[in-house]
Length: 195
Image (cartoon, rainbow, N blue to C red; front, side):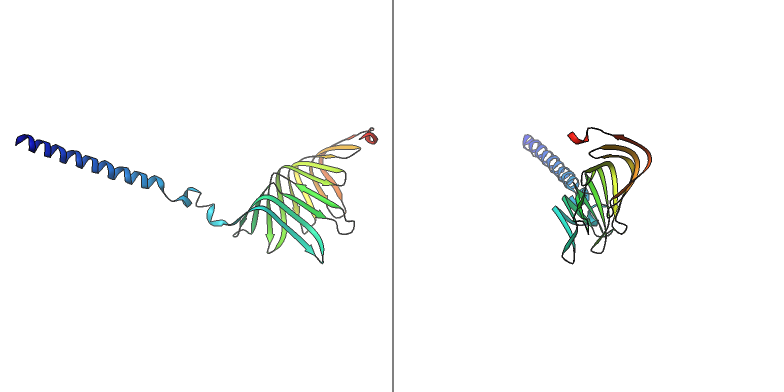
């Protein structure tokens, strides 16, 4: 009889211990599982209104394409009326000449004014091409109202006959005027006819 009581007491202690361990494990698992939205970042997620793959936006005025922006991915932030894009490519179509100015970068931020583009800021391997001129820098901003591309970073311009290095630049897109602002060095090549 004594053995039966001892076994029952031992069984009761083991069952209580297993119940306690099970309760603590379930609380720990529930606490770690948490809210998946909180894991993404409470500051980040509420602002994002849309995520878009293969983003494309075009401005057409009186049947003429004014500009076109494409990107591998875009995120629209409704509170700030901005679109953050990855691998953006922008083409500006010249009004009178039918020529194009192409601007690309690693990432960018489009600032909107309602449905209109106000500005595009590009970062990382920024490349601007107008005809046979290629411009490279690490950051550039296109201001739509002024039709102006600016940068305060190091800039390299390459053409068929010359290579120019400087710091800071302004490109008036319409008239296609390029101005380097500081520390300008120019190399003129005589073998341009072979290239």
